[in-house]
Image 1 (cartoon, rainbow over the protein chains, first blue to last red):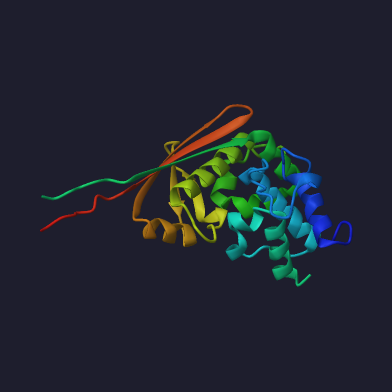
Image 2: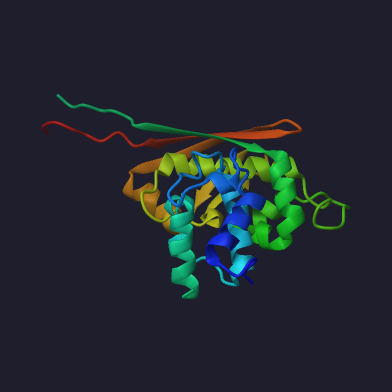
Length: 85
Length: 144
């Protein structure tokens, strides 16, 4: 279930809750490198699980690559592919 | 003249134990079963404890996650990364661990010519670390 009714809003909320980012999520551009912004590999697991909860799908193995979680834009592309949102 | 050279690759990773504990608390079995093999979960279980949080040694899980990430640094996947469960820290009866690969992880190792992996784990109360070394069998070069 989407948190605020928009894909981007939900992604940002998940990142704020689970991304362990060193900067406020509001300051992130669509293409900001999330790993460069402080997200660890382990935090990206939490982001993945929280996104699955929020959008009610499961990431396929082929999508489990670092590039899927490297930016808000890449996450949105993955979510869109998986849900057709 | 025959040139013989062993290629070594090294991966290192560090994990905050509290992060793992928080993941177990929040996502429970879904987190555990997505990341760790049944063997790894069994090795990290605390006998006599109940409940997902108290039933596991978080530093043990954290060290295993660090080892999986360290293996990925050795394998250097370019596209899709292997499932975490395809990299297993297998604890031998003598107490030390060895790495067992399957699926995509095993295919990446084979493609890279990596013939063996060795791992060392360490943890304190708050941090867990793993170092992995991968090596390739010396290739015979030159004539003959």
